[in-house]
Amino acid sequence: MDLEQLTHLDWGPGRPPTTLWLTGDVGHILNSTCVWGPGVTGGEPGAVRAVDLADDDLPFGLGAAAFGEPPARAVRQLGEYVLVDGRSWWTPAVRPVSSRYEPPGSPALTPFLFRWDAMASAVARLESAAPVPLACWYEHLMRRLTKLGACPTGMIAVEVVADIPARLIVDKQLARAPLREHRPADERLITDEAHLDEFFVRNGASGAYGGGVWCTVVMVGVAADPHRAAVTWGDDVLRRAFYTTPGVSESATLIHHTHALVTKRLHRAEPTGAAVERFTGATDAIASGAHRVQATHIESDTQLYNAEARVGAIGEIVTS
Image (tube, rainbow, N blue to C red; front, side, top):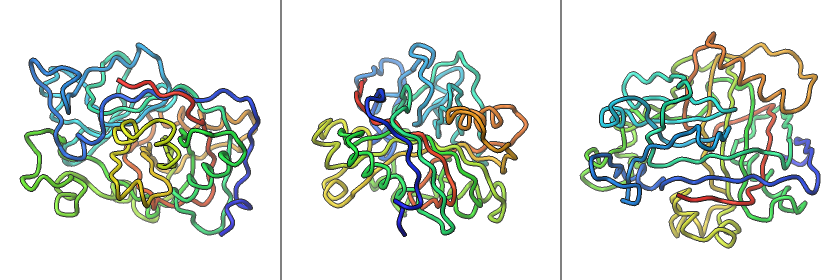
């Protein structure tokens, strides 16, 4: 499969890079060591902190979050979180899983959060008759932009809009909050096969809509070449952002976090305006309230046929 031929890339030199804000550490989610309580400070390992999303007014993000009062009760539903075009959705970690839109004004209770400001480095379009794994397309975009000199740092932020049969969406949603009190006795990761079904609902999109139903998916993600990113940003940032281990960083050519909003296929007009309008149009339709929406974590082997992406080369990372 020649992704060079299947991908149209619109880019140009001198475009502004993306600034990424990294809060917390994803490792505490995977280890189920998150904690909230009186006296717990933001510097304590695994601390769930309250983040006022309005402070920075950043339009994109993903991570784990909960909303509501009192916080001690809200964090017991700590689940998947997606921020697209300044709008927040989250999936409380309860069964049966159901996602909701969170109006502006409430702080996000989070142990781990990515947020970023823009994606201006490139716009890409995939047109393929055969399905392409999401991670393969990410890797192609990373390599191509690196070769062009548009991404020297080894890390990109991406928004992807695609129509996909639900059976090709490989996803999972937290159904049990990754709190310290829920940590498995064997101390394995919650993504270990022994604990996966205790903590997650798998393939929720297919279960919600039916495998043969076409869905519109709006994904936001952060992807990295672990070797180049480690040189640029350091091992600690890479570990906090992606929970890298020696085995992963030695063997992987690309790692990523991707979350998405999934709904039944939107009947959108043929795009005629600027690229940004084509992306915001899908988000506006989802936000209208007329559609059932799933906010979910997207796996690498989700597959695409036709998709559009806007990409931002990460030029700065602000950590907290």
